[in-house]
Image (cartoon, rainbow, N blue to C red):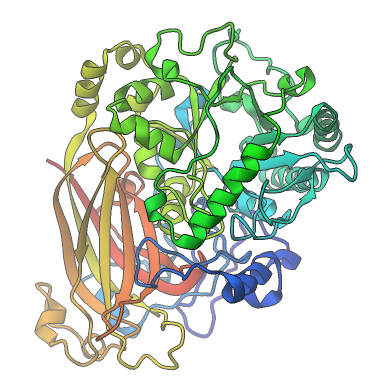
Length: 632
């Protein structure tokens, strides 16, 4: 459980935030690394600075993010266990709070500061539904520290991603020519280093056992996306090592439940407990290639050359290894397939029983899925995903660890959107918002789940029924101000800092696979240039503290309004504090994202939102806002 100190620093409002989860996983001190520590991410970042041929994106690119160090806790929903610096509320905001009578009787500003800004509905974390009815916080190429083609492999990212909230990690296993009984983990046909498969398994077991000890019986199950490139002897070694190292934690047979489950029916999430659940490949005849080389127009010359070299190496390599029976048996509730055609969503039989696996998981690249969506197959794919698993992985051109956008694929019901956890970009920020306070599994909206009323409909009727489930709503974000806005890197003082808040509302679009977004922003806060009338708004004259507020403690006192949007329970709000720099790009100073479904439980109430930096670390900055959501 989280233990919160009752200590207050010399400033009476410098208190730690209260945990939303109610439990935390503590990263051991020897793994709390920074870029300067020379750890996995630090060493790789340094090498990329010197040797990478691809220039980083501008810092004002709201899609971009920095390399995530191991002292960051954001990405998978667990940053709400507070580990960062203690907080203060600026004199200007304290004055604003008093002037607007925000505190209830007997409540202090410290009490308000400690309140969580989200309230996850109980039904969202109900584990009594079949596994395909959940979104899963997921990691792609988990073993990599940074770059996809010449980064380092390490066991450390497994601990970090699992403790940050991931419940699905990927392991790429290959034969070790020096010892076939000890397979290695690496990114094939690249310059990436390798690590022993056994060591990866040990780290995963350690995290699972730590969760059992701290959580009174364990957390949610851990899914293993096992990408096998081993021959028969190597596969036998994989099975032996998993059973030896994971022992009782490994799910190696169907769970026994009170109600009988047919072979083609999925297990309830609750019945999996905290088991390690392996997803094993099942090779179909003429299966699709895992190479995703489309969208090459978005690559620079270096990326194109690297992709072509890797593609040629794949062509020269042996064909996919057949899965031996003992390994196939470990895919109890997940057998990964790359179908050769569209029968998996067009045929009533889905995958033919004579060739198809039980409990299949469609493993598809974002490029391959986007191609299907462009042909108008979204409704059919969404119906498939209501009953069966899908894993979407980044296209092959994302070699610098940039990410796919999960929101459109969540809108299709894709359970596993595998993200590169090496950078805290827009996708990871949205992932953090989706899984905040949930334990890594989120129940899908009803229209994306398996129910006879939806699954039995024809494609057109299905679309119409989905449209009827969307509710028209209005969002008003009342923005008071912020305390301790970070000063951009490279600046010694807050001179010329001109902070403003910009917010983007995002949700899956119609037709399926698209995404809609609408942006609003406050005015720029300038020191000593706001009149008392403007700061005071309609609630009365501003105080001297508000009028003379520091630029790092801005008071905006504005309302941002989205007049109408369609609420399908997958609506997110991204918030950025930026600086309006003259004659240069506007740097992102700190960020936060929320799923609007989670703030409806606190709507109409003032809340402090803890802001993060672009590495996913907590800052000392808090944003005081009020969410007002109304149905039209």
